[in-house]
Image (cartoon, rainbow, N blue to C red; front, top):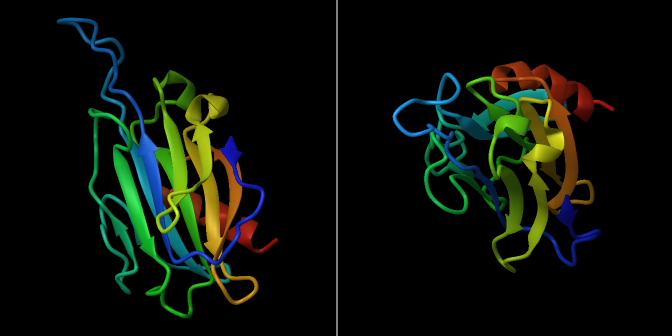
Length: 182
């Protein structure tokens, strides 16, 4: 994991990016049983209560602040295959945290994925706040990357980087809520 130990100013616009390479099909015959489908999600909480989400089945949060820019089911292409953009100036005031999650919808462990990574970028400065190689969570199918929160009135990012065993975001909600309650 790489990232800054501190943030020089409050955050306003942030992107979470997720990238990986497609499954090796081995010519005419595929190796493995399916494409690798990773998912990026942003879960919005009010305290420990889950209130909204942006992910591949709901591309925009109800307040319009958080947008998933499209689902990749294969990892084809260079760079970020999925992105979530958060305009922190538009987040509903009831929301106290926006938590970023990566999960493998097809059940593959991160160690089976070629060149998988996730990152969080401050869009105003272009600074990468955190970057994580998914192979470092090799035995897991999910990863809580970090959260945006406002402990002192303005938005800040805190890296969490906690591997978990989930395939769908619904499975992650209670785990994340417990963590927010600490």
